[in-house]
Amino acid sequence: MNVLGIESSCDETSVSILSDGIITSNLISSQDFHSKYGGVVPELSSRAHLQIIVPLLRQALAKASLALKDIDLICATAGPGLIGALLVGLTFAKGLAYALNKPFVPVNHIEGHIYSGFLMEEKPKFPMLTLVVSGGHTLLLKVDSFIRITKLGETADDAAGEAFDKVAKMLGLPYPGGPAIQRLSEKCKNPTIKFPVAEISSNKFDFSFSGLKTSVLRHIQKIKSEFGSMSQKEIENIAASFQLSVVKSLHKSIQRALDQFEFNSISLVGGVAANNAIRQMIIDISSQYKKQVVIPDLEFCGDNAAMIAQRGFQLHKSGKVYSLEFNAYPSLSENYFNSISKEND
Image (cartoon, rainbow, N blue to C red; front, side):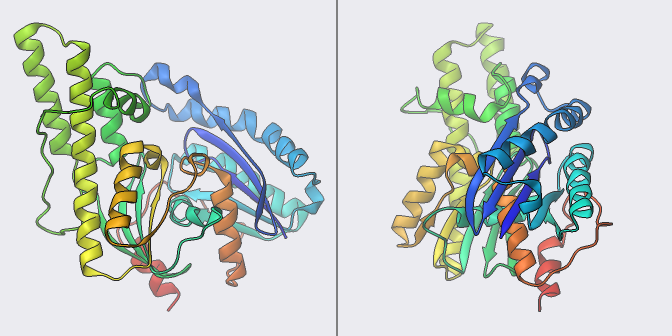
C-alpha cells in the first residue's frame, strides 16, 4: 500500500510517501523567512503552503518512483495548528482523495508525534511513557496501544518550545530560540544561576514554565540595571541555567510517572526533542530505570509528513472511516485524550 501524508500545521510544508510501511520520500520545506518577524506570521505561512504544496507533491512522487494513480490512501493533518495553514493541506488532501476516489484520513498532529518513534528501525514497546515537547505543547502521556492514550500531565502555561523562544528573545537571540539557546548552553560547562523548577499542586505530573521565564527576565533586568549590558559569558550562563531548569522540570515529572506506573519503553517526541540536553536526560533516566528508549531521528522530531502518513495508515488499518466533510481544528479540547480512549472502548 502506498500512503500519502501531508503536513501543513504551522511553518513547515511536508509531503511524504510510505510504501508498505517503508518511507520512500519525506520532503520538508521550512519557512525560514519568519525569523525576521520573531515568530510565525499566520497569513504568510498559509500563502507559503499554497505556493509549495503542489511542487512538493510532484517531487515526492518522483523520489518514490510513483504516479499519483499509484497512491492508495491519503492522509493530512487536521489539527491542532494555525487554522489557515491547516486548511491548505487538509483541503488539498481532500481534493486529491475525491479526484482519485481514494480513502482519506484526517490526522491529529500530536498523535503523529506520539507514534513517530514507530518510524525508527527499533520500535517502542507498549505501554510506553511518551514526552511530547514542541512549540505549542508539552505533554506527558501513558500510551497503551495505537488507540489508547492517557494524559498524565501537561503544561499549565507556556509549552517548553514557547519558553525557549521567549527567553531567546530576551537574550537578543534569533527565532526559533531553541537551537540558539542550545548552542550557547554548550559553551557554558558549569551554569551557576539557580532558576526555579515549578511545583504544581493540582497534578504532580504537570509542568509550568511561566515562573521560570519571569525569573530569567528579572535576572536580565537586574544585570542591565547594574552594568548597562550583558557580557557574552553572562548570556551563555543564563541560557545554560535556563535550559538546565527546563530539563530538571521534565525529569521530575518523568521520574514520578516511572515510579507510579509500569512501562516497557520511554519515547521523546516533538520539535524540542531535537534538544541535546533533553535527549541525554531521557537516555540517562531510561538507563537508570532499565527501560527501552526510542527517540526519533532529527528529521522526524520536527513537523513532518512521514509521521502523518504512518498515523493515518494505523487509523485506516483499524477500520476507521472518515468523511470528506471533516474540518480542520486549531486546538485540542481539554478532554481530547480521554475521549479518544473512550471512543475505542
